[in-house]
Image (cartoon, rainbow, N blue to C red; front, side):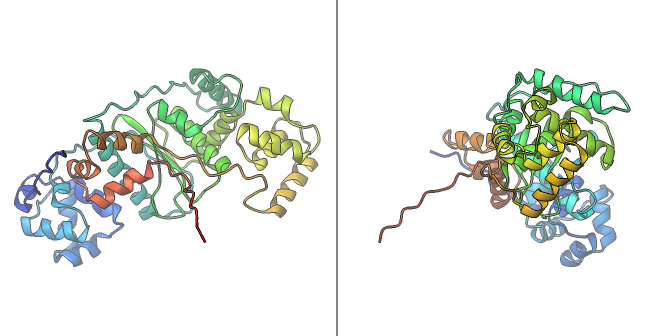
Length: 370
């Protein structure tokens, strides 16, 4: 027997408990400009600004029109969810290509996902956040970053071997990982804190295991090293990439395993063993002094000729599953996904989008009879 859903909140009640931040959040998610929203609702752009700043509260009729224009239930705007404390800013990998509106939409999705996580945790305890704390020198040298990655591997209890599954590792230590919905192909992986948990968002467009593992390790680097740093700096991006490379394959081990000559049969073996790309292996070989400049350039030239995806496919990208499994477990209680959507003040379709973003999708075998 399922629990009865709460009746819809009347617009007048929602207007009385209006939360300005929720309006800005919904507008950023729908990627709608203030003047466009104002035109659809029949108010001025200045009025929309006043609503979002909390200077004026919309009437019940205006709130109903705002909810309709933004495809949100009026409950979404009725408060009940405090604005999450988000220290610092999100670290986007494609900061130079994505527009501000696209980044705003991606961050808005993160806060909407945080709402779902908050509701799930009312009923089910998710893994405790247990990320190690790293003190990185400022400015950090390349050796400092590599040492931080080694320290992080030790804290995660990884030993000298490969990381079996980067996404599972982060989820087991309390990080919420989701695939980004179809917001924009120019928005790449990013990480951000929402409330008391860090979130990592991965691009589903990169259906490549090696690249998704590198993206996940890159965002882990930001979470561990760049707590209060202002994002957008290429120095921070290089540090996160260097951290990811060392975290996935320790230099002390890789230096001994790399072939002294450009042997792609052996490099393919290492690609399968460590779960990183051939390009990353050739780059690291040059960085570690195994390959001289001309060998490095020849290797990169060959890889460029072969194109993307590079040879030696490792299979589909690593996918998150923690939040999706939690919702499946609650569905047996029964606390349905629709009930969670109501508690989060979200339309069922958007709640399902969040759940799907955190649910592992496995290929389905279909048999056709003739």
